Image (tube, rainbow, N blue to C red):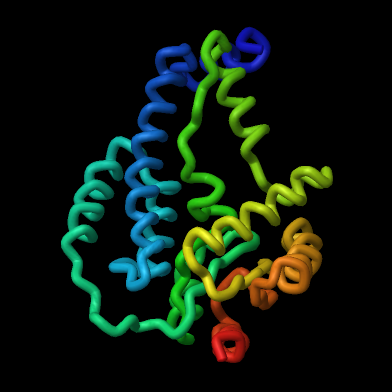
Amino acid sequence: LREKVLEPLHEKFGTDVSDKAMLDSVARHNELCRVLTEIGDFRRLDNPPITGYEYHILCLVSYCCPQELVIGPLKETLEEIKKRRPDVKPAYRVRIEMVGSEVDDPEFTRTVEESGALIVADRFCFGSVPGRQEISLPENMPVLEGIVQNYMQTSQCPRYMPREKVEERRDTVERLAREYKADGILYEAMKFCEYWGYERPLASRVLSDERGIATVCIDRHYTGAASGQLRTRVQAFVE
């Protein structure tokens, strides 16, 4: 694999693809994930000192910025959050988990939270689950093979259609809702995202009817142009 794939790329782009370079990259990734996980764990509290909007921004930054540049500010942010003292009375009416296709527009999460909800857990593309989990490399296995195996085994993308993966995604969504004490689940699907568009109605029915978790489905455009309609849907769900 290295001879067929990596070496030609190394020669063409000048990228270091040695085992040491990949191990160093995994170590930086894992350090980043540990910091974000510690920040995200504050959302388990009854009155979290961080909003879903703030956490979404941090996740997006971690995807877009070089790891060596962002890890320091993220650690500073973690220490600042530890010192926060939220208002005695929570500013939200219900706690929800957001699930679905990519949400790289933080204004969408702001719209949801301005409607009376607090996003305490997420399971969507560019979110923290999956994506911000550490990579565990098996011993006695080539580094590249270990990285590939990790992503193949842990990925919960709806492009994986076998029944065990479908059930795994539903179990993960339910587990997160229980762990983060979410009152309900918001299943969103970006327009034209066929995979989540297929999964969302089926999964939401199972979670609502079979597992007893209040669930709402929302279709959204790529931009926040329809924020008025979205806000109305979320407000109705909160009620």
